[in-house]
Amino acid sequence: MNIRTIVAATDKEIQDALNIRIDVFVEEQQISKELEFDGLDDECIHFVSYDGEQPIAAGRLRKMETTGKVQRICVLKDYRGKQIGNEIMNLIHKTAKEHGMDHLVLHAQESAIPFYEKLGYHISSERFFEAGIPHAEMKYTLN
Picture 1 (spheres, rainbow, N blue to C red):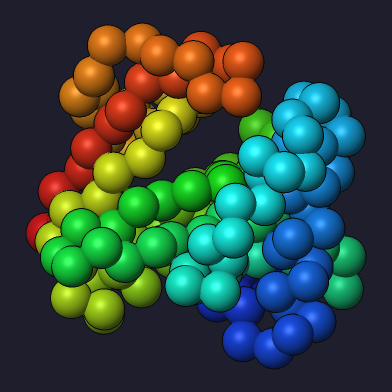
Picture 2 (tube, helix red, strand yellow; picture 1 turned 90 degrees about the vertical axis):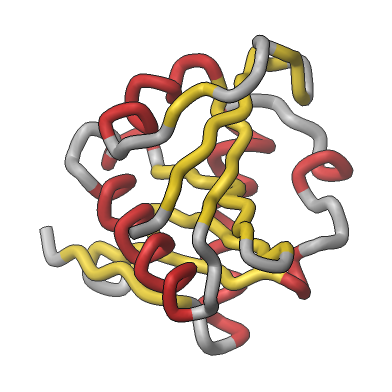
């Protein structure tokens, strides 16, 4: 594996990130395209991981004053458990600091809560359903 994680800077890189979201959220998890593509992508910073030239993971960050909302973190099934999610999150944290954010918030699918807890996020809400999937809000303070 030759993994690299980047801030998507070109139309192709952004499209690669969007395609990963279709694979994971729309096709694998059966979330409707209308829910997945909420009209906010143009205001977000996108992230994509590649194995060589193959896109394998994605995420986005939306700035809301000094808080960033981490969204749409996803890794293709064959690449899960290989620390690629950590790479994306580390780059999101670095990018958020560079853009003047001091806190991050996200809505974690219940199955992903342990992943985010290992990164230092803490649950800040009761469980709720989003797109028919149990979630909890989690928060993180950037140093």
